[in-house]
Length: 243
Ligand SMILES: CCCCC/C=C\C/C=C\CCC/C=C/C(=O)SCCNC(=O)CCNC(=O)[C@H](O)C(C)(C)COP(=O)(O)OP(=O)(O)OC[C@H]1O[C@@H](n2cnc3c(N)ncnc32)[C@H](O)[C@@H]1OP(=O)(O)O
Image (tube, rainbow, N blue to C red; front, side):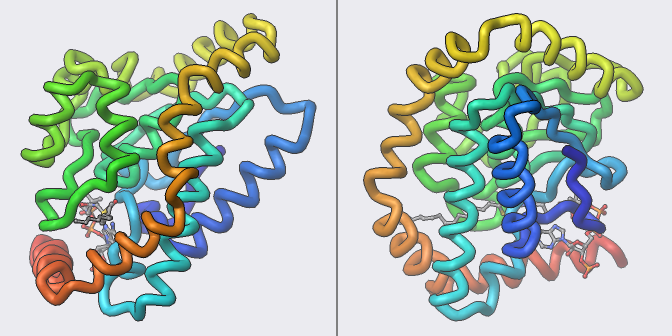
C-alpha cells in the first residue's frame, strides 16, 4: 500500500478516509494475508496528522477528524493482516504512530528519515493511546524521555532504542520488507492473529472503552486559544523554513 497524498502525506480527513476504505477492502478480501505500508512521497513517509484539520476549525469538524484518526489507528493496530512498515522517509507524530502500529518496521538508512512522537515541539501533547503504543515498543523510561523532549530519532538511534526493528540501505527497504513478510506469513494465520490480539487488545481496549470521552478531550484541548496559537506559530515556522 503506497501512500500518496502530496506533498507530505499528511493525514487529512480525506486521506484517512481513503486509507480506511482501502484497508477495509484488503481485510475483507481473503486472498490477502499481509500488507506493506510505504510512501510514494520522496523522503517523507508521512508528516503525521494534518495540522490544517486542527487549526482554525470548528469543534464539530475537530470531533469528526479525531474520530477518523482513532478509527485508522484501531484498524491498523488490530488488523488481522500482517502489517509491515517500509519506512522510506521522515515520520513524525501521526506518521510515527502509523509506523508503530505495524507488526514490524524497516527504516531506510538516511539521517533525514527521523521517527518519533514530536508533539511537544509543536506545543501539543501525544494522546494516551499514542503514548501507550510507544511505551509498549521502547519501554517506559525511554518513552518518558522521548515524549517529553519530542525526540525525532535518526535511523541509528531509532534502531538502538527499538522504535524500528531494522535499518537498511535505502534501496533495500522494499525487498527487506518483502523478506520479512515471507517470514511472518510462514506462521499459520489463526495462531498469529490470536497471539497478536492477545498482545494488543488491552492497549486498544483502553481507547475503545472511552472513545467519546477521548474525542471530547481532544476537541476541548485543541480548541484552547493557547493551543491554537502554538499551532499557528508552528505552521508559520514551516512556511518560513521555505524562505
Ligand atoms: C489535558 C487534556 C489532554 C487531552 C489531549 C487530547 C488529545 C491530544 C491533542 C492533540 C493531539 C494531536 C496529535 C498530533 C499529531 C501529529 O501528527 S501533528 C503533526 C506533526 N508533524 C510534524 O511536525 C511535521 C511537520 N512538517 C515538517 O516537518 C515538514 O513539512 C517535513 C515533513 C519534514 C517535509 O519538509 P519539506 O519537504 O521541506 O516540505 P515543507 O515543510 O515545505 O511542507 C510542504 C507543505 O506541507 C505542509 N505541511 C507539512 N507538514 C504538515 C502537516 N503535518 N499538516 C499539514 N500541512 C503540513 C507545509 O506547511 C507546506 O505547506 P505550504 O506548501 O507552505 O502550503
